Image (cartoon, rainbow, N blue to C red; front, top):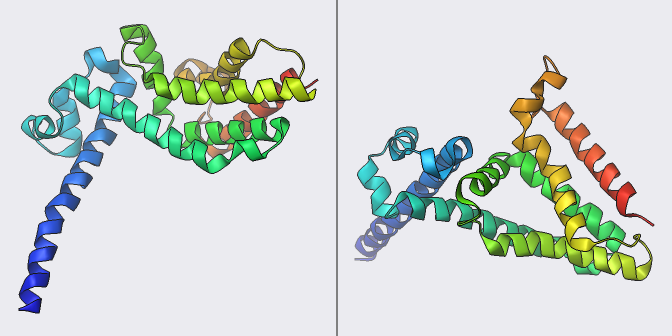
Length: 214
């Protein structure tokens, strides 16, 4: 009897694990599609082909293309929230906190450059209709808070923190979103290769910190 019960438990948990794996595969494929086409031109057929499932399977997990798109953006928000929680920026002086945040932001962009493209296309195609406001509040709000702490302590010069936060994010992310336009500047090299990514990270941090320090 104990053996039979164990087998039943195993069988009952496998569908849940498979379901979660399938859902994540669909999100990965959708993320790749949305990064190239945005929401408007994305094709469910293409997403299905990437994962080897039918469109009916996609609609089993997500009722519409819009819901799938929202889920991709929602996953970005969850990942960003988890990342921010690990940084413990409040425990650091503003100068060190900003450097740590920049390092992590650039690391995230390096690991998944498609996110920047999706958010750029969201602005162009949908005028921010689906943009996860919580994500913006988290990222820009955190930068604004660090800048305000730095100005109060004298570590940073007097800045307009919201505009500065936007410019900081732009400095970090433009390289990724415009890579196809910029590749002629480094002929024969991969913009997303290790060498140029390390250089972009360091140059971005140096430029930003030189701009905000008092």
